[in-house]
Length: 80
Image (tube, rainbow, N blue to C red; front, side):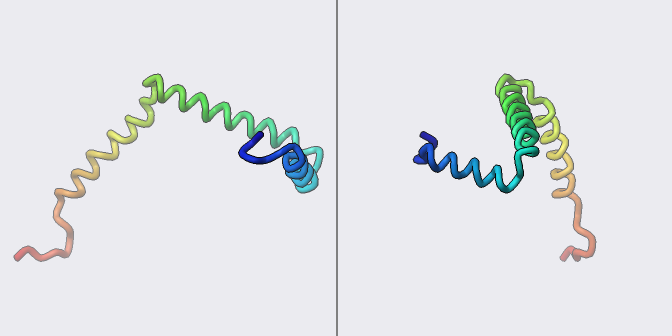
């Protein structure tokens, strides 16, 4: 079923989670987990469509500063 996990193993895991978090917190945890997964999927599909300008823009901003740091002389270094 799920990578070798059968029905009894899944029920045991669910029961342990139920004991650990309690019945009141399970719906809250499930909804927040679902929102996180949905947000991740949306961002991945946006990047695949070419709308990931935020990520590529951040990388472009980082590259010029690294070039200037590499060309500037280091303080305290004596030239022969």
